[in-house]
Figure 1 (cartoon, protein in one colour):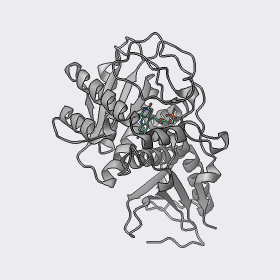
Figure 2: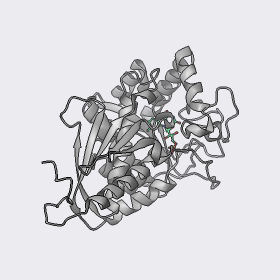
Figure 3: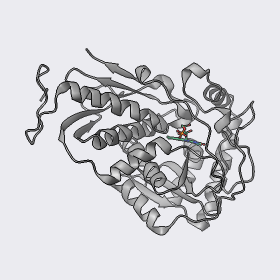
Figure 4: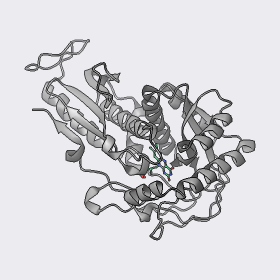
Length: 342
Ligand SMILES: Cc1cc2nc3c(=O)[nH]c(=O)nc-3n(C[C@H](O)[C@H](O)[C@H](O)COP(=O)(O)O)c2cc1C
């Protein structure tokens, strides 16, 4: 039912949330969602705040990284992460919401519509995740020897499953396969002029674009358990690998049962929940998607999952020995991604 535009929407429990308040809360949530991780920091989404008190998430195809993401998988995972961030912001602000993913209507770029259905008391766990969103950063440095506690890994698995996806912890005997698949993907991609052009595009952004991965956030190439994507083809990476060896790091494959757009969007929501929970638990995190981007390494990743699901992204989790803060990564202005229908 489309609510009466001149009056405040009324929740199922009878609690009216004034329209102006809902629209303001949507603005705050969409702005918070800019903190979400995205492939090459492309931030490939747009939000519309309608007069009918609906917040609509749209995919921005102009930000698709074609050479590694011809099928929009990574774009959809990134948009899912933004959707989870927005849901979290609304929940923490005390709103109960309803989310319709891929609503009927035929426009494949409309990914979700969110409505406020009432008020609720914020959940402390969600508040912790929300606070972690401001601290979370992709940390490409090597992690230390301290291992991730089993209890934390169980917790991470639970938050991922609550979002409709799954987590496979790469076993020691599977690590060589992950390393080989990632190294091969990186080398094939770097041989592709189309990839190099897109990599240059997203790692050499003019400051006013407020997106992309700056050389300051790239890490020097070095011997790693699993190689890290080269982000500074022409410049000097700003980060040293550090003293760590990644020996204590956990590598997890986030996966789901399907590869349809709705599965990938849910995968992105799960990725966000995973990263924010990990950061709240004191872990450093780094998604890596190179082994998922090309058919052959992706097939190897599916083998690591014993063919029970579709891999969405790999995540490295661990503790950093180096307490120095990471350089800032820019985000677009809210006005560039949020459109108000007046
Ligand atoms: C779907 C997805 C794939 C990503 N793949 C990689 C990757 O292969 N290597 C990497 O270093 N970072 C990867 N990232 C991290 C992004 O580069 C990072 O989120 C973005 O630059 C914004 O920086 P931040 O996470 O520090 O906020 C990925 C992120 C997402 C959401």
